Image (cartoon, rainbow, N blue to C red; front, side, top):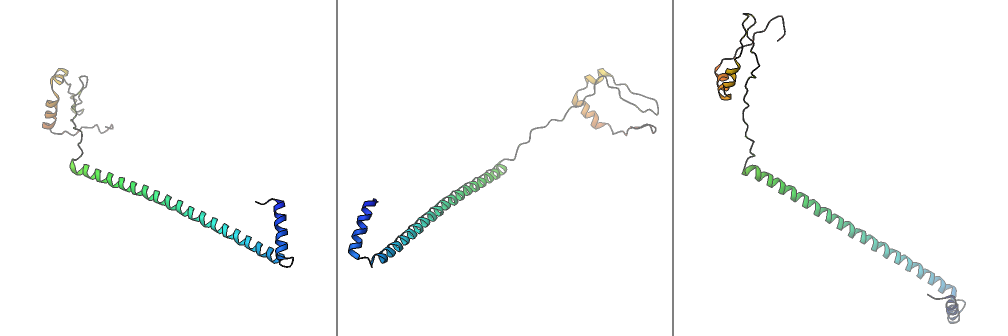
Length: 154
C-alpha cells in the first residue's frame, strides 16, 4: 500500500485539482465506495463459504447414501444366499445313536415288599447279555406298575 509520504502527496494533488469546496464531497463518496466494497466482499465471502458447506453436505449425504446402499445390497445378498442355502440342501442333523442302558453288576433289583420276595440279578447273566438283547427284552416285557408301601414315600 501507500506509505504516509505518498498519502500526503496524493492528498495535496487532489486538493489542488478539485479545490477545498469539493474535497469533503469526494471524501464522503470515497467512504461510501469503500463501505460498499467491504459489504460486497463480505457478501461474496459468505456466499462462497455457504456454497462450500453445501458441497460438503452433499458429499457427506452421497457417501452416507452409498454406504446405506452397500449395506442394503449386502443384506439382500445375505438373505439370498441364506434362501438358496435352505432351498438347495436342508441342514443335516448329526446322526444320533440310542444309548445302551445296561445294569451295573452290583445292582440289586427290588421286588414286591408285600409278598416278601426280592429278586437278585445274576451278574454273569447281565454281563453276557448284549445291549441289543436288553433293548429287545425291554420292549417285550409288559410295563409293571411299581408297588409302594403306603406308609413310606416312594
